[in-house]
Length: 226
Image (cartoon, rainbow, N blue to C red; front, top):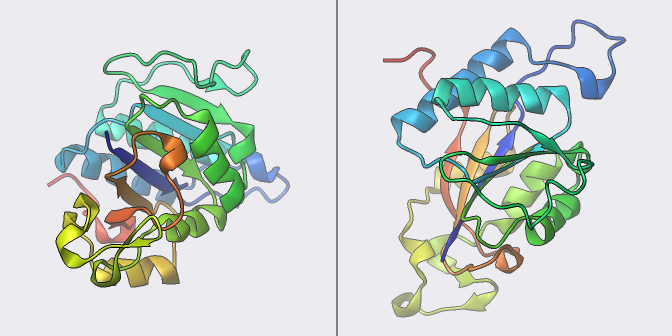
């Protein structure tokens, strides 16, 4: 069983009300449009529905999820919070066709270490596709840390493999340009998709193990449905 991780930085927020608490800032119009673009990309490229969505408790991350989901026509149910009697814990059963959605205060402005700890300790083993919505700089640092070296110098979780024994990760589309762009800037609304071909549980998802499948930037997507 493999794992797919979607790492999404919230879309652009609204700074027009300066006395508003940081966690309460909503999306700007540009942020809403970017979230809708991501939703259309998700639908038009036939990306599978995440089974588990972990979202920072900030207003801007929640708004990003809602606008994306509406555009992608996802069947979203109620959002649980991390203080709802452990409703977001690893024992929560999955429902076919509807992702589990957890609003996590621990993910607000979370560091790389906190985000990685969440992946490894909070997500049920049965989840194959996880969407994590968080903030800079933690989300960029996590993406870069999880990313395996370029296929030309690939390792499998830190162990060198000869060309003839490379795992399936190396067969996934990875472009050097996306890697360079990711290292340079992780824009608002940016989405990184990582695949872990050899991970059968989330504790096995560690630094240097992921293959870059996509690095999506809203400014490069169509602004309207074709």
